[in-house]
Length: 546
Image (cartoon, rainbow, N blue to C red; front, side):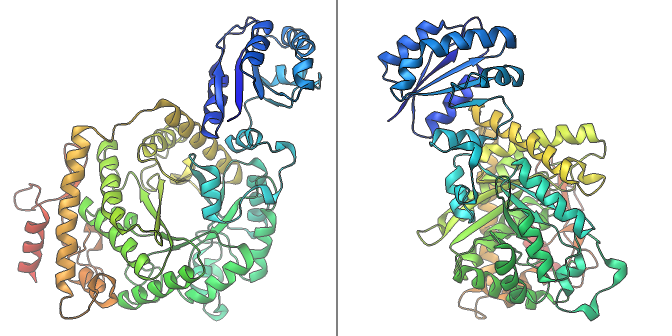
């Protein structure tokens, strides 16, 4: 195990940067010796020799002129250690780093603008000034493992103009602010990419970038081949699923697919397929990606949450998505957990709901089926006021870190007002990164609180009852009811899976009534009494109406 000795030199008492540097070093296998604030140069070098340090880190965040003189003297005293092969790192404010860099003594200097990945790369012995595409893993699982224990940062981006989007992708990649760019393409491309005759010029750019050819995708990918070489992914589309998937693999090396179970069809008005047919096609699409070892994200539970479904349905839909991904042969499953859905859900009940999701799907894990946790802020939860929206982004991400996610899907703070620009993507990711760093260094853990654990137990129990009911619904129809498109469609059309906003829907019942209770949980209620009801009561009422 290599050793780092580090502290703030001279009269400088600012050690937050040193502490963060040593924390990253420990996570990457170094033994660390922290000397604290205001340490004389001679003491730093004395300890470095005693501890047989492989690296010495010093920090100075005061006046640049004083720092230059102090560090010049330190470099002179430390020359014998440097000659012996000891590495030296410096951290300070940008003006101090500018001065100290002229000494040509330190192996690397950090001014606080570096990404976590760049610091980690330095600690792993890489030259952070010349990292190439080979230094940044180009598959999702490799990048997840490379960056752990820090989560991957993902953001959605797509402007209604192709050229502007290409320029924006390059700008985002060069900023090194995220790991995954999710290309937001317009609705016509999602549904009618291979059917120009069905495209409507009046819809061009509605909801995202108007890609119309494979070359358009290739150009977007080429624009991302700079900076930290982020991964790319995009929508799975609402028709011609396999043809789109084949193109995505060839043009953008799609990092993972987002495949719903019940959505993006005639039920939500976003595709031409009927409910049962789309479920069958989505399962086939999962299997296609599974055969190629490409991860599949469950683009599922939050669609129920955004339609005010109560928490039990949210949890069950996440479980059914994971169950079907495994049954289809997917090896790496990304479970997406959108917080703040429905709006009004409290932070405590959000954490409980997501913990229940994790507890429900954990038994599905095996050597051939890995589960990765992805979190995001609720699309419908952002204030229009931009200052308030910035605060909401940071607080939401800090809360999401309680479940130790593998991926943080950042939702840009201007979302309630307009589609985010490249500059706003970068700014949003910087806010999220700060929230993530603070959460990881805080060692705060509220998941074990009695209130949260009690709600987790309630949800797992209630979700289990609903899963069993769906299984019984398919008894005599299928040998594996939970993975049968016919049974799954029946679970919706019968009202077992329901949400208030499905009223007057061609498939959903919209009969359930939900409300946010005093703890901030979304629960089903009896409209006659206004009191919460459990799944047994709700299902009994549903059967009576049928």
